[in-house]
Image (tube, rainbow, N blue to C red; front, side, top):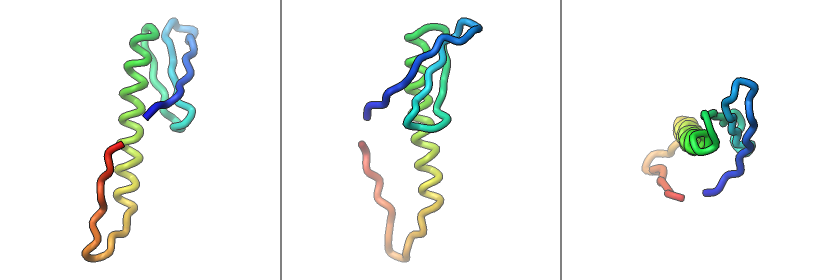
Length: 71
């Protein structure tokens, strides 16, 4: 999957990255390379956490199993 992110230079010298498509998905780094590596990790963690919430919310019927799909 591809996500767009924004980069902003913070007053303390760090670079802050945000993924607008995923509310609250923000990271930082000392430079552009580090912040991009960190936001990729943050996006993965955000998606995993949302999936875990969705799994808990599933109301499965007897004999019906959720199916995992890799994208």
